[in-house]
Amino acid sequence: MVQHNDTDHADARQGPSKLAESPKPCAVQPTHFHPFRDQQECDLITQTVDYLNHSGFYWGPLEVDEAHARLAKLPLGTFLIRDSMQANVFFTLSYQSPEGPTSVRVLLKDGGFSLAGSKHTFSCLFGL
Image (spheres, one colour):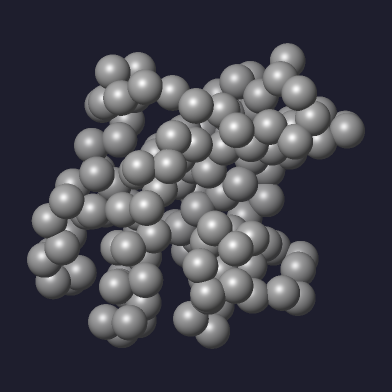
């Protein structure tokens, strides 16, 4: 995983950190994410962001080019999770593959998470 310390990305992590620190009604949270379908989805994403903020491999809002540049010279399998720049997707997994840095959308469906193109769904992002 690609780790960082809080001082490196304090500004980039302000939005998601606020979401995790003050779980108020989801409709009023400042975020680039699309509206939640229901309270269960809101709770799942809020809890996931809280876990991610403590994980060491969550970078918050990070452009694909920046993510790939950070991964370019790192060992095979090194990864990071970042906010998706797509409005209908919450997170993206960027990782070092044999072909070089690669990114895949993490989809929220049926109350769980899956990687784009996969048939498997997990109740927790960390199960991926």
